Amino acid sequence: MATLVLDNGAYSAKIGYSHEKVSVIPNCQFRSKTSRLKTFTANQLDEIKDPSGLFYILPFQKGYLVNWDVQRKVWDHLFGKEMFKVDFADTSVVITEPYFNFTSIQESMNEILFEEYQFQAALRINALNLMQHSACSTVLMIQKQVSDEKHPGWMFNDVLSASAGSLSAHRYFHENSQELCCIVVDSGFSFTHIVPYCRGKKMKDGICRINVGGKLLTNHLKEIISYRQLHVMDETHVINQVKEDVCYVSQDFYNDMHTAQLKGEDNTVMRDYVLPDFSSIKKGFCKPREEMNFTGKYKSGEQILRLANERFAVPEMLFHPSDIGIQEMGIPEALVNSINNMPEEMQPHFYKNIVLTGGNTLFPGFRDRVYKEVRSLAPTDFQVSVVQPPNPISYPWEGGKLLAENPDFDEMVVTREDYEENGHFICEEKFDI
Image 1 (cartoon, rainbow, N blue to C red):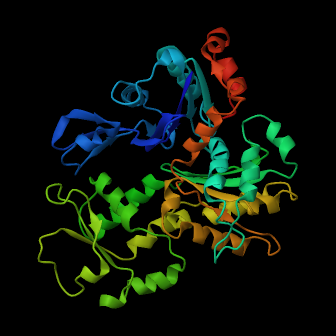
Image 2: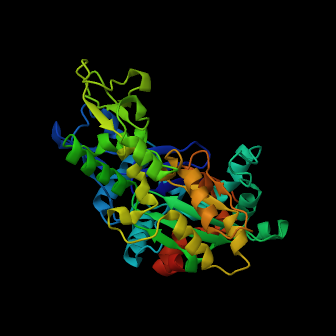
Image 3: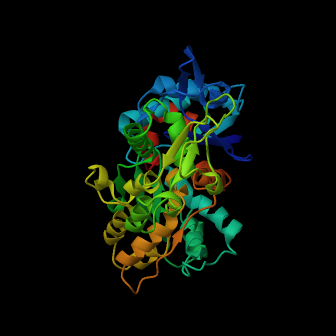
């Protein structure tokens, strides 16, 4: 029986069969201003000739799946002939959902998977649970990278131990007698979760949620640019690309802010971003430093955004949400607070195993900043190490792929026969959401 792994994120779906490579596809529908009567689904975004003013129709709101009509259409497209050609009579599915998901949403998910699509077996799981399995593959890929200049304690041996005790069988515990702990930062589209694990089980007393994610960062950048330069409140697609291309996490916020106020070439923070016109320029790009015009306007007719402190002030919200009135801790403080809620004897092991996942961790400087601030807050006699996988976006999916290959996989899933006999009760009993 084939196994389809679907990391069903609020912004993108990471999907693929367990024996194939992952595909990252938008988990939404679109309408463009040039063709408002036609709706584009998932990867059909590539068919839109002019994505300016693109209107997003999202199945998720505030991190939870609430628009089932849109989600069904996306899944119909993904499972259909154009994409993965799923044979439901011979396929099981591993699918992710948010932490502490509402019971009504969980039950709707069961009904759709088993009654509408009629998968033969299903495993509903949190994305970070899958992450623990993918830690195995990460170690195999980069175990030679034991340390770097800044982080002599950046080691992967403990992550391998942590992944050993995840949702698969307890046989791993017999192979390694040392404590199995890690703490995961998952900074995604809707919010940021911090989740400690010990022996493959999440420690619910230490779970933190910060209500800052990629969506909020993009919206804030739209507001700043609209106030200072151009009205871009309807250009979510374009400004999201700007954010990914030019933003970074500052290592010294006040020094960078001072630099951003300097004039001319002394301002090393400033960048000029060429906006796409979707005619000659299909995708925006950052002008090379040597081609920037510091004294006047460009003669090429290109539409330019000049960005300075916006580049680092927007990602700074992940570390200081109070900057925009969100009275919550930043990621480093939340990490330390989560670890402090754990038993005292476990705390050194969590500090040694901080794992970063999610799209926001791709900002340049993110890992270094987390390490720097956690190191300053942690006890001096504790080792601190921060691990960032090669691809934090597909990291949980890779864990699902390993999970599907696990010899105990059949014991974790709920079969269609189990569901028809016992209903939602069997899913509630078996899935630890």
